[in-house]
Image (tube, rainbow, N blue to C red; front, side):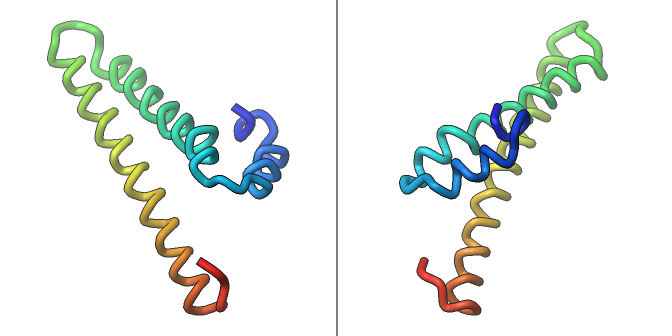
Length: 92
């Protein structure tokens, strides 16, 4: 919620956090869940509420977005970590 309402404070809190798992639980996973929920609701509104097929399409779209966001986040984190260690001599 902080990333949406006051991003400067949220990024400051993220940078001060020592345990990266707490960052996942507090910021990353809720944002991915919010995006998935938005896609689910938007898909239901677009396809209508009638029948089980609209629910199935909404769930498929929601799962596709969630998987893409999880994969994209961890792939980007890995790439940034590798570039930081190889190009800039930073610690992993």
